[in-house]
Length: 70
Image 1 (cartoon, rainbow, N blue to C red):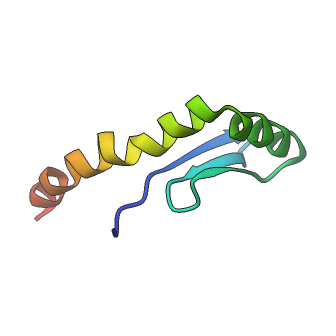
Image 2 (spheres, rainbow, N blue to C red):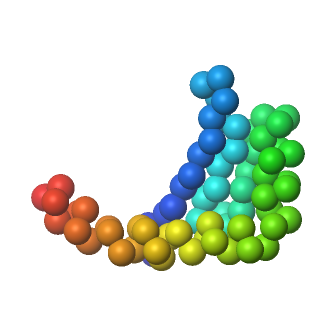
């Protein structure tokens, strides 16, 4: 529950788009980023693949990463 997957895209040192597993969709922060986010959010297969990354990557690695930090 406390794990969140975030993928951000940057252009010219500014955050353009972000996918957050807690939001469950892409959000755009620039004019172009809003357009990208709208297109990616329309693609159901891409959106479900991004949502799956939390389980595929984060939840499978969080315990080992936590143990390595300690």
